Length: 70
Image (tube, rainbow, N blue to C red; front, side, top):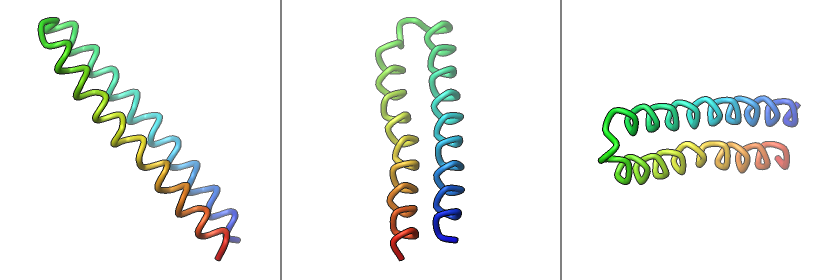
């Protein structure tokens, strides 16, 4: 039963991270197209945002391992 819960949690986190990364990158490209002079600052903020979004699947992976080993 714990393995099923862990699999569902990981699937949700992976889908959420994929959608989040897609939104962040698309909005960054849109901002670059509108204001090319801010591309460096937008790129920096995008990398910070992607890093924060990618933290969620890593945390859910750790929680999934803890649930499976309980």
